[in-house]
Structure formats: structure tokens, C-alpha cells
Amino acid sequence: MLDQVADGVWVRQSEWVWSNTTVVKTDDGLILVDPGIHGHELDRLADDLDRLGAPVVAGFSTHPHWDHLLWHPRFGDVPRYATAANARIAGEARERAQAMAKETAPDVPLEPIALLTPLPEDHGPIPGEVIEHDAHAVGHAALLLADRGVLIAGDLLSDVLIPLLDPRRDEQPAAYRAVLDRLEKAAEHAEVLIPGHGAVARNQEIAARFAVDRAYLDALQRGEDPDDQRWGKRT
Image (cartoon, rainbow, N blue to C red; front, top):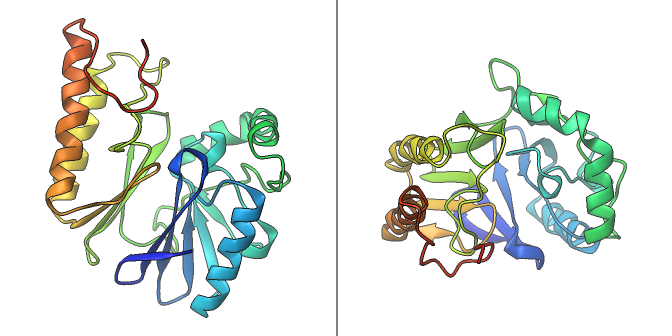
């Protein structure tokens, strides 16, 4: 079920790797961010959205990994926005994303996967500030809803996942740390941080998320094995 975390902002967590769907209510209707994961969960999400009494007017994908490219026909035939790089990469890898989804979540609708529209210059119906970067994945974006005190972080700043670096990016982990610096400035306007996976962070918990990710990156740069028990740690 949907958990309201701020004014007009709800989160629904999947069973799969604690994945978070975020719903944002605007004057025009609902914005659906990274819906997932299993087909039966998407169907229940659609039931939850019906109870909110407003139509879905757009979707938003934070980055081009398969679990952030999903959709369900019940959400409607509406634009699903992403950064230009995300839309391009997702389109090029659509068949692979469909194959990965079929393997992991066999009941998920395959046809709508990765059908993204590049975000227009005025951001269309997507509210707040879009913070584009290449940490974790090329074309990644966070959404800062400063008027509601919410930062939607995508696959960064999780309490259950380590910082997963994109091997195609140069100067990792230094480049990743630079993105954390940008997001930390944005988080000055937030009391709620929604990661792509894991628990929602509030108030002082937000600073702790930045601290633990920086400690992980610092250890990597020193050539050490990070003392970090979150999922994904390589041994």
C-alpha cells in the first residue's frame, strides 16, 4: 500500500530488493516515478492510484536500468519522461531490459518497458528540480521537490545497497563523490529522502546516508575493503 511521506508524496515498496515507487500529486494529476517491480505489485499500485482519485498524467524514470523502466497499462498511455541520455540508452537496450524483466519478474508487462520520452526543456509536467548526473548510471537523475521538502534520489543513498559504480565512467569513485556533493546541497532543502531501494530517510537520517556512502568511497580510494554490510558488497 501507499505510504504518505510528505504533502502529496507517497511511496510504495516492492518485495524485490526493497524497490521504491514514488507517487507525486500535482495540480494536473499524478506523476509516477520508477514504478515496480512485479506485475501483481503494479496492479495493486494501480488500485492504490485509483483510490487517490486523480489520473496519472506522466511517468518519470530516474535511470536506464531495467527495474526503473517498467510500466503497466492501467497507469495509462501517458508520456514517461527521462533525461535524454536515459531515454537513448534505454531505447537501445530495450530488448535486454525486457529479457531481464522476464527472468526476474515473469508477470510484469513486457511491451511498455523502456518506452521513454526525453524530458523537454521546460520539464513538462515533472515538478521540482531535475538534477542530472552520471553516478551509478549514465543519464541518472534525482528530483528535488523543495516546496515539499523531498529529494527523490534514484539508486543512490540507500540503507540497503552499497554505492554501485558504473564501470563505464572514468575517475570513479571520485566522480561519484562529486555527485554526492551536488545532492547534499540539494538535500539542504529536504526533510525526506527517497532512495530507489530501501527505507525512506528523514531529517538527521539523511546526513547519515551521505556519511556512510562517503566512507565506502573513501575506503575504495585507499585501496581497502570497505567495512560495509549493505547488499551488493563484493568480497
